[in-house]
Length: 88
Image (cartoon, rainbow, N blue to C red; front, side, top):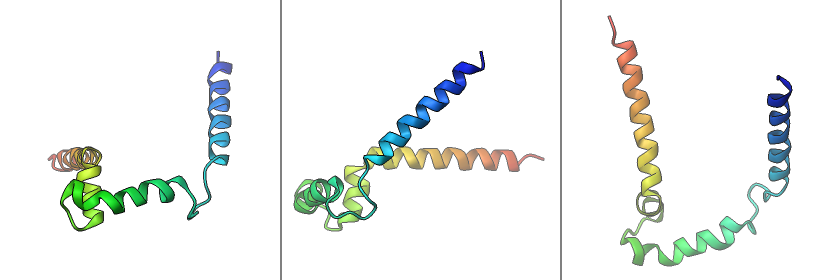
């Protein structure tokens, strides 16, 4: 029965290798993120969020739920560390 996990690991590894070959090069100015996402944020940032600083608008307004989730995970981890280290 140890053959099945090994085959699964191999299959996932091959899928990841194939997926990586389809990614754009690092820093490619013609990557989809640079040709579609960035121009949208530049054009609509002020009117949709009311925030003049584009980085703040993206982190807080466009990615607000994602940022809230990250902060929640960090807070939970920090609380767990304090609880473990605070024991006597």
